[in-house]
Image 1: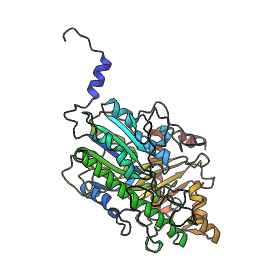
Image 2 (image 1 turned 60 degrees about the horizontal axis):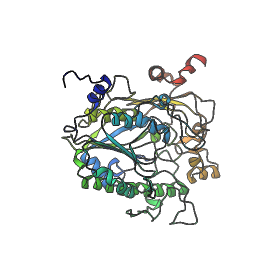
Image 3 (image 1 turned 180 degrees about the vertical axis):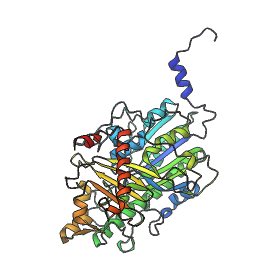
Image 4 (image 1 turned 90 degrees about the horizontal axis):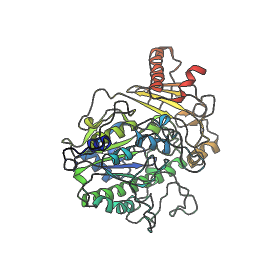
Length: 475
């Protein structure tokens, strides 16, 4: 080959490609659920049955302090797939219908970076970001030509649809992005109670799934919700959808084993944002942003690790790329890899996360920026003169409608007036006030903490290219 000139661009690609002989343990499966909180057995819930997810936690690492950065479906998924806060991706809110938010065309996303490094990539289920070219996958498994689309509420059927991709005789490692629409709210018919609407897509018509029905009186009511008959009924339906996720996850992992890849695949399980109840989804209070994250790496020597390191969804892309052996530039992502933490219970230097939420539906402009430490959370409500806007599915929920019908002046532990109309800054001591009720932003005893966190928020906005940083100059 002497005398043959190889174009430098080709050499650059070669340096990015993993050596396939060394990449046998570099397959990646990321499972993203829709509006799931930490309502799983392995997170301490004693009612819901999640044996397959509990086993995954026992065989990998369960994070106790994992956070989304924006409590809205499309915006959060843009963060998961880019490693950037949504104010930098341009996916400020929902992709679908008249909302029509787009990610900037110059964003280099996880599937594109992995494909460029020699991975074969596929997605199945809820996508909810655009444009597709920015989030390009080689294959879309739920809509192959000539085949009926598979329900993205039936993870068991989705797993079977993914079988061919997982089992393919191909020397390249794979990345499968597997997204269920459970346990998102639904407006479909409730087959168990035809007289009332079904709020979580439940029913007996999911092949491979045995529906588990929960009684309203047995479900625990989270502190942020009112303990009412309406709330309990909706939580019971939500639990039913959670149990369906667990069965589907069990089937997916069984298919992965049958394909011979369970022990050479990085498996991640998470949710895009908190549960679809007022006070959680679309808010950056703890129920909206503190979420499940379980990771099982084939390289782990310690199993069943419970890790207290504080991570967020901007950390997912760099973690996956490090596992894949794909190099990236310093500062390319807003997050950092937590791969080295998987065998640590109390890693140092992981004691703070940031969050950035702007829209949900296009009518729901309410930008919030957050710094969350071990003890404190500081929320900047950039549009605080506006009342807090409601997502349509939350406003129509039986939980919220019952509060309105009774004329209650509280929603859970919080005054209803404080929930609907918020100040510019909120500061909470999460050790003493885990329900985030006592705003300490104007408390003289907490002035030093408030000033420090407020400055950290400003620096965070500047460092991450937040367009809303102009508020500091013009207001």
